[in-house]
Image (tube, rainbow, N blue to C red; front, side, top):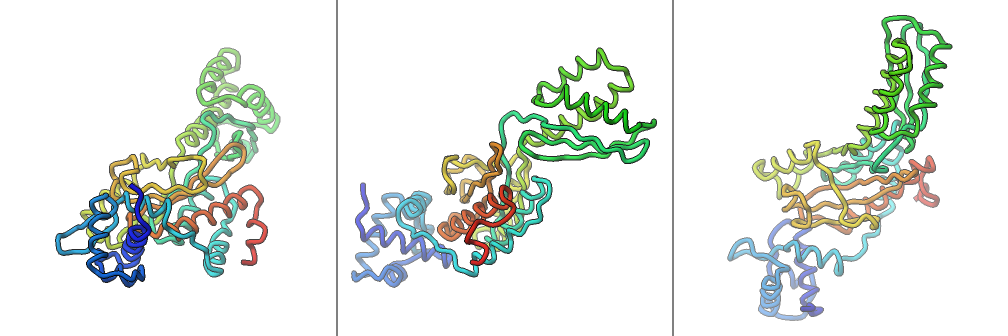
Length: 348
């Protein structure tokens, strides 16, 4: 059934009061918050109806009401106002976006740390590229007669390098030939294709040449394997303990362990949205059934997308958190793609 305007105002008052105070909300508080010109008895009846409809819950018989996940969902979809960032907030986020450009995974790791500080919630960040990546180029740099650096660039512009030390000598001309062989035979191949090609080359190359080729190709395979795992960078997990819902270690520990687990893989419910909110049971993972996840996507170029978000209690200020994440994600897109902040944002 559709809720009346009065019921919606009461539900909104309960949610916003609970977000701010973390205490069950009674009829008196609702009357003050919603400024309704009706009696407390009328408000109590309306709150009882909202509870019967599943929008509110009553933790104890004598206590006030708290929002249910269904109530939060209606609030997010229909009732909450857009949050307008203050000049101070935009300045703080812009300052935080002065992330020194490094290897992509280090930028993403830094982004997670920044979001945790901006929101005071545990934060996560990750990049999601094409399902099957390939190596675009190999560059080899001679360090001395027995050492060289291999630089691998993927088709998504991720760059990794590794120092190799050898038992024998290696000349500049030998290294150039090795680079030519690698760029001719092992670029444009997926992770699954590298091993068969390496086996084919082993039948024709000399043992010394094959050992060098195998060293670098195996490094390239490690890079692709690592990227396709889509590692999640988490930060600020201890921030959970600052919120009333998690001050009990018994309640906080399972969620903190889950967020620390390498298997934690947050996924938006709708990849076409710039921001997404998953409330309580809407989360697939059992460990998140009593928590909410707010996420924003950013563009890395070359078919890659990123995701940055926070995890916290369902009593989250969704409007404020969504606005901050959206603004940060927009800035991160420009930082990675253009090397600076969006036009018009630098002086805000």
